[in-house]
Image (cartoon, rainbow, N blue to C red):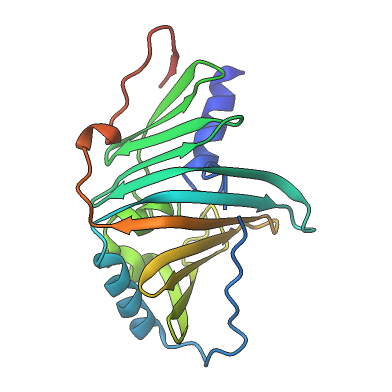
Length: 223
């Protein structure tokens, strides 16, 4: 049971929708924006915005809703991302969890269960949305159909996975004044995970040690 729970939890969280279960809903109005740009122009614009941040740190507030709009979970926490493929996502107590990747493998640590699950990092962007922010942006057009709308200092992107086995049906990524602002993922049953990023800082020097995980003594390890 612990192994099944651990693997299921890792699959959820590496999707950012569920350690990350979560995304506090940040609503960016697009009603006054123009028609979506074509895929090539949208991909180029998104790559420009992502490439300007080699590291990202900040806090997040996450809200998960079911298909009817009923709240399932609300969490907060801290994040740190570094290209290529390094990320650290720490959800605050009382639902504390830590997700860490060194670009090759992922550790999902649950301090309440005293359990860590270790798994190879799935490099597919549609299976690991965190890689959109910390990985190789040149893969974006290969993995998604992209449109974007821009008005004033807000740029709003909608990404639809091309692969049928994606963990989500659509992903919205928004920037304000060139800085990451919020993300929303919607899955096949209509569940929405909304994340608002707070106090975002870009291109600060980050200690490489925070992208590895030293397993505490007595922790149950699931490979």
